[in-house]
Length: 164
Image 1 (cartoon, rainbow, N blue to C red):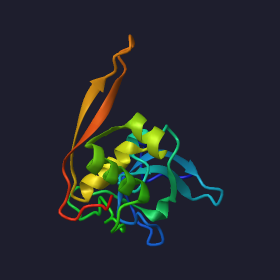
Image 2: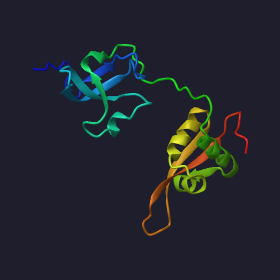
Image 3: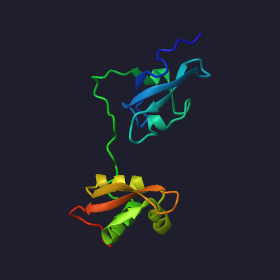
């Protein structure tokens, strides 16, 4: 019979130096026995580079053998977020930045129609991390359905601006 060291819902720490999330906290989603007989777990990793814990359906996540996990201790010096390796904006974010400099505002529908950008909130977050001051507010259209959407406004661009 397999003895499991961790319970579903328990916080653990990834302890696998060959894995990019080594040292990151994770939460146990499921436990099962690996074909070799070793206890194995499905975990959701709490890192900005992995699928967010709340977005994972039950039973989906990263698989780790019990030997690759450690108990989580709140006082430990865990790396909750990996430093970003990106030093420049993605081409999509650069396009959005140039549009904001020209027009001042943009919505998700406008970004999708004009630039084929389907992840506008992600590009806005990228610009904000790069020093752009961008405000957002909910608005609704004038149709009978009154559909709501977010409009982003450029408040202030960083000192080094994107060429238009």
